[in-house]
Image (cartoon, rainbow, N blue to C red; front, side, top):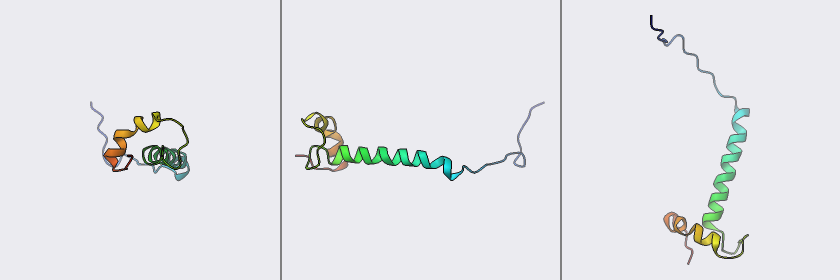
Length: 69
């Protein structure tokens, strides 16, 4: 005998907002860091000296339309 779930047996439980907030904050931080490194590093607001960060993100800058040289 096979057990097939019918629509009356399936219960969906909403995810509480409190459990989503840490993930939302983490994802927001990662996106902001990515935008900073792709768009602003090695410019007027450079945090790292040298050219390594610029060269690492060089193609991403051009792909996303950020000028770099």
